[in-house]
Image 1 (spheres, rainbow, N blue to C red):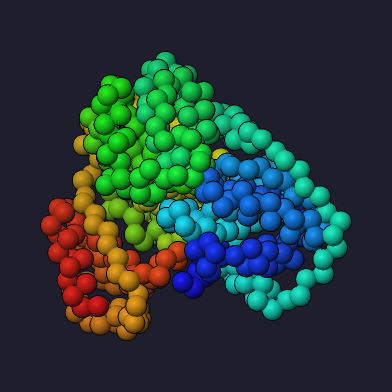
Image 2 (cartoon, helix red, strand yellow; image 1 turned 180 degrees about the vertical axis):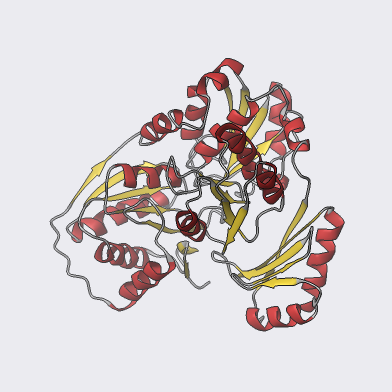
Length: 444
């Protein structure tokens, strides 16, 4: 398996495409790329992360850097800390939603955002070609409970009515897939006055379900919500940047509705009419919610940094991705499950509706997400062929190919993180979306 490199950093299978030498080369290239200052290191809970973070600290010491080893913390916490502490940058050792045998590096710039495409490419060039001047006079320091500062800042966000949330004493089940959010997310919810029931909140790297917080992977969470008679269930991925929600009946909401419901609460609270920014693969429900409050939606290419850059360009106060990623600039420019959970609870506290009722009040669309292995398929040739077969659709080639009709669309693009082509479709019914996906697959 070849090492995957792109706007999401690097990812590979441990011991195959991802080895200590690959790790060291890319970490030292990052040090070469960044300006003066300290560098944060953090990781998710995968078992090989312990060895890798020690290797990373040693690599930075040899570059003359002062490395701060925060251990297991959510990726958004690392982003928050880099910006808050005015560091030169940060590196999170994670493969996010990939299976346990994978790991990787996410590179955080000095502003707390991920490196953009241009800077990532420069990093890869340095890693591939440069001999590093190793000074061997740096140092490393351990830091624990780094998420406490993140929680404190989130509690003081202006858009949330923390007192209203606390008065409701919500009962919530948390499924952190034994990942980086295992301690941080429950602590965040307890600080908001919630009674928290922990499910898979031991950060041991043993993922007891599929690592993505997709509906099919949340059966145990749904059962726990029913057993505890809880108001909601929250699920994250292994590095804690995405949030999915289960209603009081144990039914998973589509992860597309995390940002949608948070946006409804945000617009209702703030009265803002500034555009919301999301990516091309996110739900049309966002457009309908924005329209309801006199706002609009602007779309970017898929990838957190692409959404962030567009948010900065247009001055957006809220953005995110339909995969459960909520981005609130008042906190920091990154997808954040702690911020997402707080905003979701804020929406719950605005009236007496149950989560299932809030969901039903949202514009209803059905999305189908599929993929095909790249194999010998040439993505561009496949997309050219597909476009020729849908002459009645509006096409958008910002990121792959998106074909758009009034209340439906299909998006075909090469993945940033896996050797696959993703095919997402949405319509007013699941059948409409499924039919679009099947038509595309037949043409590939």
